Length: 597
Image (cartoon, rainbow, N blue to C red; front, top):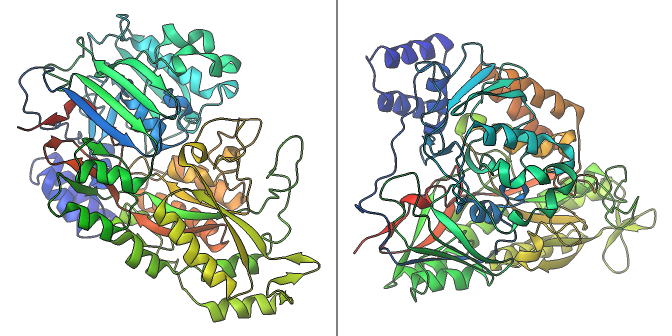
């Protein structure tokens, strides 16, 4: 859309000639999703819609137990150390951010009294500062008051390199976080920042108490007892936690939203697999909700027939993809395999990576495995629409892969495996234990065999694969293998944080306890340059082009091999009313969940 036309439409909303909903519908017609249309309005001074989720109960409590099933079990309950969505959701039971994202991309306040806007003086015209007003009367679970000091502390905690927080990338853009008064904080950015709703928002924004964690900032961060026994502001108070197994909470009687929460207790059971989790909700009714239904769609449809539950879906930017390791996972340097300074003996050859990408039958994976759970893709960023690259295309072509390898000098030996200079195309292909993933592995292995590439399939228990245990060699952040497959979650309707997985300063290393978000270890100066430029580019069209450039650098290099753009899918009891969003944690509004009679 032309800039003059866009400004005209925004002006029509500001002076009341067009409704917010009408603007969003108009933007959708030219490829802008609701979340980004909302951000355009916010940047132009039009406040976010701040509608709280519908909630019918008239009093807190009385809902009995709420039983959730996470087949990837929660392993810790500090949101600053969460390496996956399971730990983000576990933390969200007890901790809250200033605001969260609803399914339409609107910011909804939690610990904030309101969402900053030009109208209320919260957003500076030059994009360099944001002022948040905090909700009054909020208490931590131990009775201490929540204040601006807690917000400032979380910034200090996250940016301290010795803390090794997974959330650090969302806070390093800040020059300072200033306490204006006990219930007001001012965030000052290092440069004009178009996407200001990153720090203290959504899955990276959950706030921990200063009075509990102050002693454990920095090098002692992993020693804090509250990493496993949280003290939050959320709707449920901590009762019990067995890492990798079960998490229990009870209703917070002092919760700051009236008449909430509805349920008296909450239990999150971990372990098992996605199929048994779906069955326990949809067919037997043993549980009320099951997260991340990565199950063949045909199986889910059969379960829904006459069952006690249903499948619920919502669009998201989540992606199932493969990393090809260009570092050496089999040689140790300074106590670390897959060291960023090492080189893989064969996957550093662009021809080999290109061939493997051609050997992924994405259409079959979508058709026979994921169904309504996802769409085949060649892009890392798939939503919102204006950030999806038109340049990347996928292709399944065994003959073409063979030709590329022939021309690159990789010849088939007597055993059928290609080799060159004494090095064979033999790889360990790792993922978590999950039926769709094992079937995807098998499809890719079969095609690779036809091109002279041998894959050893390795499946790791999900609670181990996604663990935050720095001593465990099989965690996905270590990348101690040649190829690895998993889903990465886009936590916001803006892809800035999503794409920091491609920058050099986020490389996962022993030094940062493998908490860096760039797990591939692949770096490109052009990607770094584009990312830094996008962080300060206020023109939305130019900013989108910079993110598309980053997407294309990594996907064209065939280091990142996108497979399925995933629809976020869960299993839910027929009587449970959750509020589900594809841009935040599943449990982002756990406080408003209730059961209908």
